[in-house]
Image 1 (cartoon, rainbow, N blue to C red):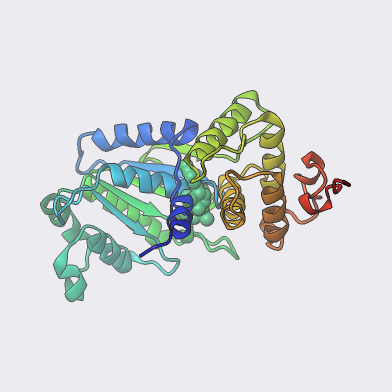
Image 2: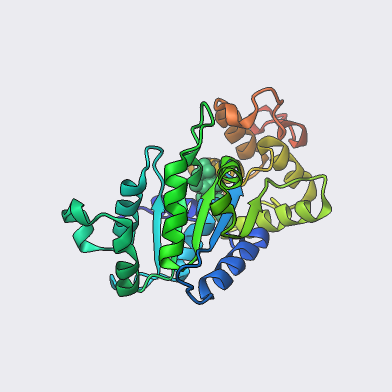
Length: 304
Ligand SMILES: Nc1ncnc2c1ncn2[C@@H]1O[C@H](COP(=O)(O)OP(=O)(O)OP(=O)(O)O)[C@@H](O)[C@H]1O
Ligand SMILES: [Mg+2]
């Protein structure tokens, strides 16, 4: 049996918040999902944002909304693109994502032309391809035109929406392939929170408020308070993935500590620990230190 502490740690790691830009993106995906299939008229949609900006989480939330209990219908076929991708491997991954039993056992059927039939049989309404920037070589920026072309052919064959998610290289891929570009029906850009914009700062505070409420503690930590929200932003450059990692680690420390909420001490310690990874910008001084009273153990002792 799991201890109370482990249950709380699991709950902490499972937090996902639907708010602001996440809600807006989910709404657009739902509208796209509801559009009628138009065979021979491919439509492609992109979600672009830097690493840890929250793209995959949005796709997860969308997929969960359309999940069905049995293997059929498989309303969303979801795959992650590998860098070494050609027409055949793309077809194989799409068929597998659609739940085609033959594709996994018989490599001869792994062809794009089989996909429309499988798509219909399995009740697929949308194809989601994550990490689509893998079609651009990270080092020399060379574009995998064959695979990009295969996505275009796939879009025309199925007529259902194809969502491509990836980092900014995905924009380059679309721009460099006129035929793919011609099928682009929309794009969502996901940016880190920006404290110089009132709207974005409001959205950050809203996210922190919801996150705080979801944390497995009897009391909230006031994370959305402006001074704390600003410190969290400066500690993480506003990237949602870095914010959640900081909050998770702080939460773990607070649970370990037996405290009823996370405080500046936990945030500061978590930040110190995580700055070992360059993603957090090691040159900064600890943004939580200046908000903090003297450390608990440094607090003046009462002399009786
Ligand atoms: N709405 C959200 N609520 C809670 N946590 C979130 C949310 N969005 C993102 N996160 C957290 O941020 C981290 C990064 O998010 P995600 O993996 O979705 O980013 P990504 O843009 O797909 O990154 P990459 O390009 O590196 O794959 C994840 O651990 C995720 O749990
Ligand atoms: Mg991702």
